[in-house]
Image (cartoon, rainbow, N blue to C red):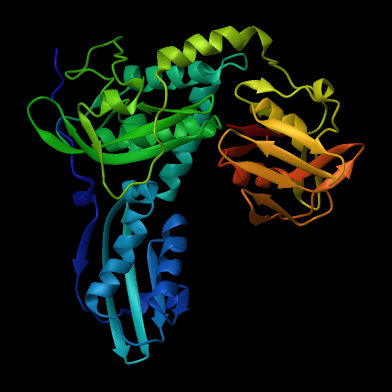
Length: 407
């Protein structure tokens, strides 16, 4: 049965109400920021939106901006962060004052309150404790999340519910709630996940839509939990037509917004599973050292295998063995004993680094490190942040298990 999709436009969720108004007395209790340029104004707005601030008061000391510039400042902040734009319900603003001394005031209403966000976080922890086990591989965890959302949620055909809170606690939401809940649950599992906004065509109408991109084993896949949930709702039924699919497949019905810069898919899920099955028996599924561990593509790095030092924290920075990490990622690692330089190649670019120096070179261009690379017991140790920046790898930190996760 084909699904009838009634998806509200995200643009409708971001309703900008323009009006010049006199700042009321209650704004005196709001922290006031100061900006001299539109760039500073934008930076403050981005920061406050990320903190889910409801009242943002900014004293503008530069040339008085136009209404259009004040409008664009908040819109740019929303457009530049898909997560934030998906959680904002409406915004209104006003300003008053004289040249070089204007008070700009934004009121932001979100789909959920901070109290509701806390309840969502606690509920997700409870759910994950029930559906996720330590021996699951990443793709199995993603499937468990997809199945839970589909089996316990229902698409809101009346278009009243838009949040992940409503999907969790009321059982209904439109695509925005599905995508946000998927995002929050996978983030809790330290699985790289993104939100993608665009349009979708269900065979009869084209409407605004939102779905997810998920990284498994270093590969990105599209995941649309909304479209995996049959409508009208069918109990105990999960579709996998939009589970971990390529751009080529999803492009037949979905089109991402042109302004979005998102990673591309490169292989099918079936091919990934085939490759994974060949290597699964060699994966190390439990920590290899006491202290800091490194996990790459569902496997813990065995430092004994490379004869390297083990990771450690120094001055609040985690240092990891260069050879072990890059070798596990499949990169070629060579040591030049004459120049005392390590060279790492990923097939596209070459990184060169020398112990004791505060910079490395990537294809000849310098890249500054937080702290110099160190030579310890014959192992070059580098800050883990640099691992992610060197070849655009995703680096996550699992505080509970003291584990660096790299994709």
